[in-house]
Length: 173
Image (tube, rainbow, N blue to C red; front, side):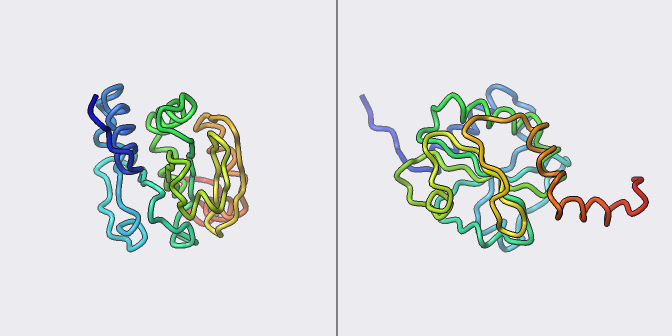
């Protein structure tokens, strides 16, 4: 039996490939980028408003995204974790809703990765965490959540409320 690569990037690629097989329309919606590209602002905008960024936690420092992005950390001990697969499928299905809220999805499916995000959050098995633009962990969940629940939580953050007021001062679009 041949050996499979066990790098986090391989597992992220495998996860995204599985999602694209399940829903080919995601090919233009979900854009995996490198952390350096996102941090330096070199990411090309997607052709559709669902241009959600999904990156691997390896080599990523969450502090690089302070005041620019909200981080949705999706972590598991293995990419085959059913909770991880279900969460990523839901995220891919509603990518536009997250993109509208300046969300960057960072995944880590290697319990031995030692990534800065894993050291900061210390997950046990599957974990979903939302880190606001100020770098503060706002929510931690041990089970998958629908994007609707994630959005409702984000919309209650003080920074998000301020953003909504700035975008529509009179309460109208």
